[in-house]
Length: 91
Image (cartoon, rainbow, N blue to C red; front, side, top):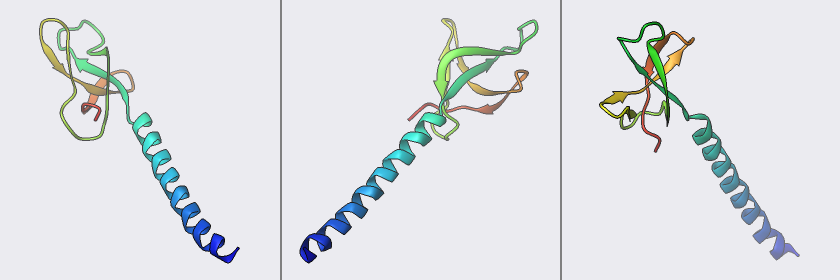
């Protein structure tokens, strides 16, 4: 019984730690994704145009989207009126 307790407690702690690390990573990845917007100077009213591409605020390669004719850098939108923060490709 003592031998079982000496083995079970460290194994339980190890599994709890691994589970917590996985849960934290999965939650972080899920919440870090957001829709990308590109800035269109020639748009009549809304200058930030929504794309279907999802990006991340975590620094890495710049997130881009191609509209068929050119590549656009994507940004996070602020209050529906301005493109403020650069977004990056999801790792």
